[in-house]
Image (cartoon, rainbow, N blue to C red; front, side, top):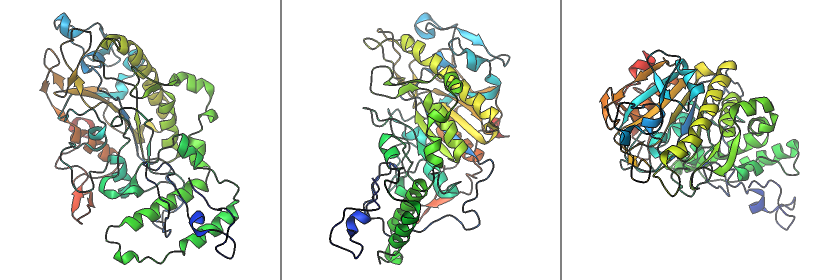
Length: 458
């Protein structure tokens, strides 16, 4: 929580207690809490401060927590044995020769706006969003940890608007916490963590009983309170604290972010088109909800100036009874995804945001080709799928294929890092030159040694 005016007690001449005066808490920024931010120092360049480009580049990264069944979603195998092919039929799309699941009719009608990857390889097999947030294997960490893409973008490109954080995470709280990870800042520190506008974060976006003039005076005083020397702060933590605090002040003194997350401002008919949904955890209760309001919220955040939005959607870990079969769960999840994702793409296009916003949908791995005895599909890191839209990419195509039983990539395997190289490319970041110094001062590339997917960007 943020406290500008504390309780009246002995202390300073204006009867403010120093500790209460300086208390600025979580603000839901990546879960970090700062109780004593020392100095304020805006890190925005002077020639761009307060200026918002008409169309900034953005990414909406939709994580299907648990791992969707690729052979039921976009890579159906109708000629495979019954224990492989499952219960669903493929349906033709508006792109000749491309078929997807019959439960995705709205997406089938706009497949010309999708790029479908059927040969995603290199999963490290963890039930976690880490690889889908960084592109890297979890085991190959460095000191401080690898930053997520949103944190890299925050560092390299900064905020579009001082009142709007560049990186926002919409993952709800989950029992399986690794699914709820919206992306961590790693060695970049808390100033580049995602803003988390959950219920607690919304409380911190209100100035309680302090008018803007008095708030500005307190901000000015706070800037000069502490005398810690920055030139002895080798870790850079104080600079991170400063940016954290500056962002907190920007959020508090502008209504822009609060308005962006207020879905009551939207046309109810548009919310109906997105499919709304529920806050109730989907499936059997340890993952995210099927709440299509999150997809609408992602669009509103991008429109407000956010560069990277991450969200977790549903529960896709379908091992079978007693929690429903792979197919009974799919009959709930697939139509909701179909409604929400198609609405998001339409909405972005209608607002002239689709060419500058890349939408990515994927999970941490695929599912076993063979249906298990209780009607489920188990973990399968050998191959998975992904869908992309927008961002100026060449859509209306399928990249890669799998073998007859969808068990391995047959041709054109695509790695997680290639997907991230493509996202960075769409954001205007050159993966061949963009580096950020780690805690030891060594430059680290945002992604190592791979290029954007040539079929999408050439």
